Image 1 (cartoon, rainbow, N blue to C red):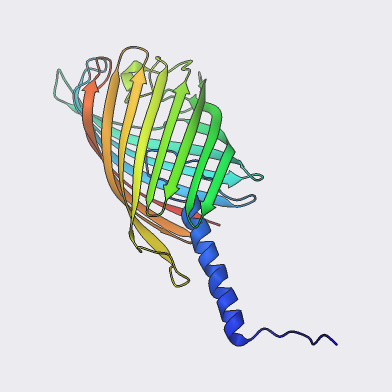
Image 2 (cartoon, helix red, strand yellow):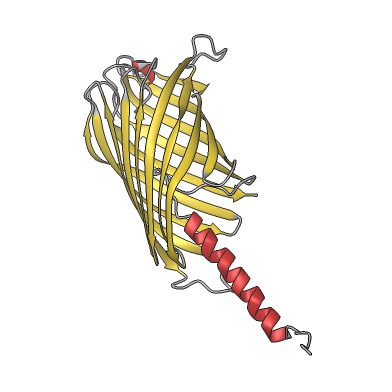
Length: 289
């Protein structure tokens, strides 16, 4: 007669540890997204990620706006919601306040605005997991950017379609993300263009390298991981403006909470229709539920 089997306490503990380790490894594979570069990752179905980010930007003189200097404070609040497997929706609502120094009079003025709403759908059409955290993924994104051109009552709103592709590769402690996005601009204002906000079409191309510094290996006791990041962020506009920025950063990613701090600095700039970037500083969190 077959005897009933019993799981020992040690066996239960082993299964629990394995389950926790699997959860940590899965979370690590789904993460590793730097601040300015997209990743081919997304929340699970019927889960969400809230990602507020806060930036300080400093720009030099603008030949179009007639300003000598601009200090811009930006708060971006994005929400990602998983729909079904490999499909998710992303909504971003940036708000900004700025101080501008007039190039002629030297007087400072202030302004604030809801900069628009961006809505995108992401479809991950390729995924190859090699075991552990190692994975390779590709996703397509499509949507629009609705811009009110600083008109607080949303009269004259324009909608610009946007499409892109994202590639993610994770090998052990190393991660790499590459994105490419094109926006067909149907409106925009050169007087308030800080990159991709003017009437010209825009092409973004961003690369990010992510390296896990702590821990060197995941275990059942791991509750999160620390990463250093390095990005090269590019933007080309069809009016001929083109620039490259580089962005070093530090990131912590836990099971439910993540924290990131970054800087963005000019690497190469050839812009004639807007102000050049002096520097940018950013901080953000991610909460999943």
